[in-house]
Length: 267
Image (cartoon, rainbow, N blue to C red; front, side):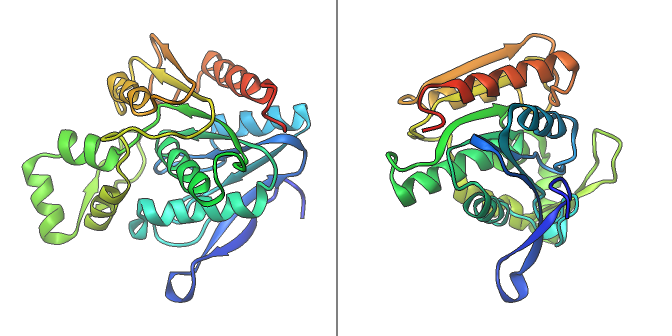
């Protein structure tokens, strides 16, 4: 199997077991772990650019698809934040054994934050392998703050409560996707922006001011929830949600390179 071909690990047991696709390339520290957004996968423009940059730099790189996404097994409609976090943590524990910078896009930013908090709680801040986060339009708490409270009408909320699901039209021309009651209710167990947190590592946030999906003011709230961490917030005046233009990719790679060059990042 080539280094860029996906391999599969099993996450969960019994009826909850599902095959998770991973692309991993060994290399020097600090490695990078890419976490995609909601309904995105590890072959997107930013993910590919990051993997290519890591290969050129000789750094380890890991990508994954959540269940119900990309090459991984499982149904998208079965997905919850808890489920996708479990998968991300399993990949991190298996493939990211050295110092790692986590790069999370949209929902991947929320998963990155939750993964970091879980890892630090498990091993302690001093022993944490996570040396930095680079978050692109982080959709922290999006199931509650952006979907349930802001975008969903009362009619949609009642449909989800009564029927357990609602088909959300895609703004990007894809097939409609299902928003389940389980996704919304599970998301409430992982809300972060209602209280302060300490990650114990530097955080860089890249946010488009013209983002229609994650308002820049929402991403800015995350800075306030991390009062004890070194946080850099960069607002791209004409940037959209995807931040996939050539200049956006260049900004992303510069941010990751800065994180990788920090004196303690490869320790």
